[in-house]
Image: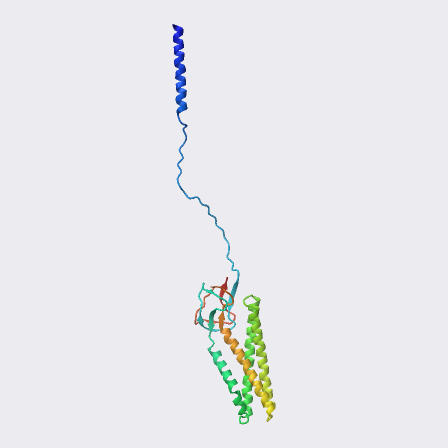
Length: 251
């Protein structure tokens, strides 16, 4: 009887242990809870540098004077050849009209040479020589400024050559005027001498007309390249000096 109780007790213990093991295995694993929320993931960076234009041109004026018109503003886009600034040219235009009138009236002057005192003709020719010398001095200064601007890369070789050509014309004009005065001294009553004198006068007037047209053209400043206007503080009424930087155009 005692042996039977021991067997029953052992069976109860074994069943209890098996039940405990089964209960523990049926439970889930315990772990910390992680909550995920929607969000944006990004990465930023910063670089420091300098923006350099691909092409950049300073705009200069070879001549000084009063600015009468400004056609652009800071930040405007322009194309090559677009009008930018106008420097006063009224006086030059008046001089041009006077020379053109002289050229037209030269034929009538030729017909009056017999009645006109020779001293008056000589005085008139001396004044024309003085004007030719002033033109040459002015273009000599223009060439010096243009050469400096070309060396700095501010103007093109074509623009520099244009100033050189106008200076050559100024030298030729002075020579023609001096030759005309010499012929005037030599003409006396010679018809051939008179003809040469008036031909020389006509050539000299045409040379002066070309010089004035060049100066008037230089008063109208245009864009040398396509680009954007920058570094500009110019307005109508300002007085600019020869070689002064007016603005910058960059691509």
